[in-house]
Length: 495
Image (cartoon, rainbow, N blue to C red; front, side, top):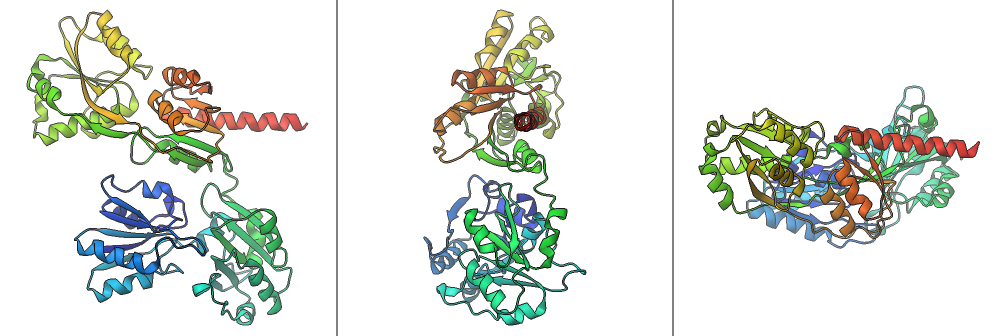
């Protein structure tokens, strides 16, 4: 089966539920350059990812090769997703890609996407239709086949007095505007360019059909852009909700700690912030020999201790793998390091008996020193090379425990280049280490989830801010406060 999916214009929230489901279940994904990284992050780690993106005049993977890649992978019985920006049937060449599949009797489906022709205006405060301004909408490609001369009846378009929307038209913007004026359009007709529509890096430029090319040049506009020509552009200032978000135009790097959807990234994006994610470390479950031995003697333990949500996942996935009856754990008390770990336990139907007020290994150990009764033994299931504070404090308190490494993290990441950000958000010391290995500079303003993470960031010379509580919500609040403080300082300096 091949699923031809429209990924929308960039904002992951505009991806359809059906599209998200198909991406998550795909064996192979062929994607365009305008598909955002947070949508690609929905893929299974085992899925094969193939970049077939094109730029104007540059096609590293020719269209006929893309068509054959779809066919070859589908013939192997794989679930194949062809992921295209916007909608696959709105200047997306989706119809061409289905032709070879149809000829070879390969089953396929089409999952429509939100086109930037509509979303671009919506995120710029421009209603593309409005009863007081226009009753028609026309979507035109600004990029002709094989770079041939445009074959557009501008006179017919101008006579409609409707909203004109050009996609892929930045390179031919001058020609488009001149042709509209030559066809009888008033040179003062309002017009707009929306760059990176719906993304937190969106820019909007308003002018007239006469001045728009010069505005685009002066502001170094880059594709992808949506060009809108029509009286509805005059509503942009009043209806522009997106650029009024509190963190619009700000930038944060989020150093991920685990795969999947990032609550912090989503929260910052909702505030209008541009987020770049440093991928999480790869989680590698360790051979279960040590854990298997401890599970067979589980009755000798009174407490089961977790220091991360990942540890919970790896531990219980192992129990499922060996068909272990979870009722055998009913005598155990469960301790964890904080809310995220507690939430992961809750997904397994387990309520933690204890977690500390401060969410770190040292606080967990001190709290357990008061909770654990004489003679009770602890089984700690956590990462290899976990923080020493936990075991050191337990040893000092003369508490018997077994520390079992059930997973390790692979910290290899590609170096990040040309990424500018106001702050970097860290939720663990290991995330700091990963960032340092991938960054070109540690001249960084870091927002950290706790003192241990902050200490690691300080050791690399970073300017550090610590959230009030060791939670994602508290970190987002801290980031917002820091941006507010900067805004106040700039306003004071201008007075």
